[in-house]
Image 1: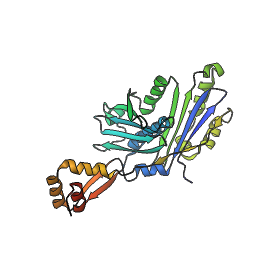
Image 2: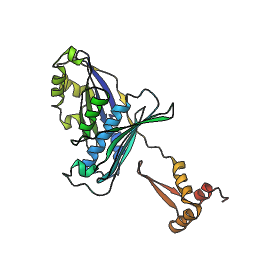
Image 3: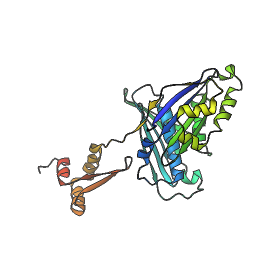
Image 4: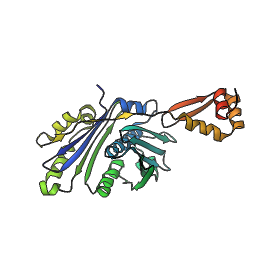
Length: 282
């Protein structure tokens, strides 16, 4: 049975909260036929998991966009997650990544930009996330600690078949509940392996790690991959190209093909489509 779920959990006696993410076919659909290397897939998985964790707390209709755009081998990492946990994304790279390439070589000076769009007000809020040279996980551990004032620990594992992650956050009252609780829970969580993250569901993994702690696991929310085609947007691209250039392309190629990069699909437009775009009688 597919596991495309996110679960919240709470150590009630310790004032520590967490989230567990497990994606299989949703993740497989997201990276299908994209040919990402293991390093790129891990970075993409980390950004995707972070996007889902952040979007799961949205209180309004809208979407969260996380992107890294820079001058490295990977010029763009992009993830979009809606308030109802529909996800899509892409990676754009200029050349193959060699195993062992540093994060700076892969991403260059790219900044992490988080954009929160509120559909009800039609407004967006954008913030820059300072990149930690140790990686994206360290970057967002810092981000959670600084923006939410919550010490955070994050684990992410990405394969061709699974994307799994776990987030722990120390609530402000935690030290009053148990001064050693955060250290103890963090040490237990650090014993998990990538294999366990990928293969175990939330209940099994949390029991394996924290069976001596009092933990409440909440009902799962479902995550899905969705990348709907917006054909009108691509028709606008053809319109902006101009009628003469569009017809020259049509004459040369027999049809106009446009690659929808984020969905990794091609859209095709024939003479009838071009006539309609320029509002000519067929």
